[in-house]
Image (cartoon, rainbow, N blue to C red):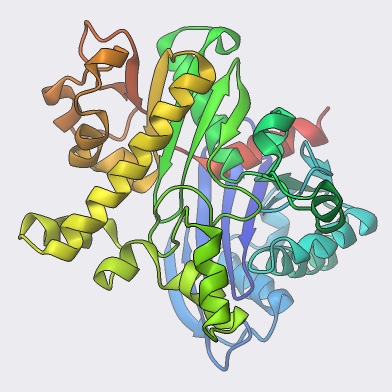
Length: 394
């Protein structure tokens, strides 16, 4: 058995999946959290499920706890069949435009890019160091969330500020959720039985984090997230688009940069409106007549439709609109609200198809809709495993 260990690490957590390289079948998954705290925790799901408190002062200890969990389930490290390790890395800037084999230089560059992604890259780097220490003979690959979007034209990724300032500080649109947008657009083409190279798609990745992407011929043309994952759509805890002048106003009023960062990343979006970032709770409150929840959903839908219209213009029309991620895949009501009264654009849902729940890819548009509307489940971990395996076997 040949397996790829997929690692998605943050500063205080490691999510992992063990995926069979050639079939994509999951062998096990788990989460180590509260790394660096007095008491950590691990949940491991494999042949058996194990959940317990641990002590994980650093990422190396977290990986050791993961291996212990595999061993407790009857699969010691030697029996795991790990032939490669794939690391999700949020920020690769314009430097990393494809999956990249990890060595000392690449690891250090990922760490250096923490300036652009202080909430993400430091944790990725720490996990990479730990994994390379524990698995010195296993090839390891960094798969970058930003890589898919590096096909955007300069007109889409350039901000209209002093070019010298932008260059000095690496300020441009990088885009995120690229792994998801890539796998979903490819699976949508496969489902439709149409060559990816001939399709114009708008993919709506709607979850706690949310972004839209205009994709032409399998290439990202534009996307809503920018220098950071803050820009664009309304999210669970992030604001999405906001006038930069409002931020300057808050700074002049005495708000610290740390407080402003916390406001935009942790206390905005749905949680800012309603006190919860869980869309299911917000929808339930709105259905019960809560005005704050009703406004939260209205603003969220307005922002999605705003970009949907923009990307129809950017692409010169679309062949498919694809909903994915937790909210996009599961909220029929939101999909209906987003697509409401868009018949003029050739977009018309079939109410019964949209209301039918399924874990499979499916069409939810009416037979006479000129634009196909689909729900396609995302699978970033399987895509990381696929890209990792393709690179190490090339």
